Length: 350
Image (cartoon, rainbow, N blue to C red; front, side, top):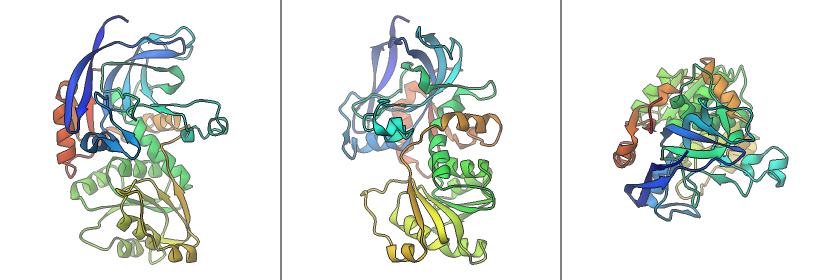
């Protein structure tokens, strides 16, 4: 496809603008996707507010966005499983395929991953993208491209649930009711966990957790979350805790609220990158700590969970902005964290 496309670019900290760029060409193993929705992730906001995450530093003009859904408009000649008109969710990380992690199936740990919107790799706040066809997953007729865009965060939730060994009969607690906390709660429920409770300090997010199927919520600013979990579990503690808030307080609480021999999954990144934890208690309880870095082999399962009605992805979307409103979308997302659960950029109509 010839011509140019509108691309939203980050020009500096807190500043968005637009560029006309060439529509990319699909290679033989790629498809060209007309993007329709792209989710705004916490990492996008962090780059927008600070210009960096750890060693990843934005050099403007930089394109944010790594949660895309859209429709295939061109197919490379080696691509057999997709055709023009297919609606797809795009997995944003392209790995090398030959390191020890790729070869053992743990491709999310590949040191040479090329990931949308992770500097210096541009993201997808733009009208088209050419992407490896094997990383484009066809959506069933009853799954929209809006939901397709949200498969990416849902994949994190399913990976967290699987890292925790989630199963029927368990009681789980999710710390944090932001986007990742909510999709983790829904993934745990989809995997058959019997009771899932959600802890947060923002009332609107807790209401959203109940709406989406949590078995109960705890406002950590009004009550002691550990005491509440102990009450709810008749003094036993929970079998599984998933920490998505990325704070020391909530991580310490997971060590206190879990029963002996249980598992804690750490998903959230703390501001400083470091925490002080009561490790003697963790040793006494013989707790297992698991951590999460993105996801692997999850997209088909996540799409199926949405298609079968087990996960209500549309329910987490609180705000939709047009591509022209990208500055407003980013500023509103930064300044209204208590009200927004998930904001999405609509790039084109379905």
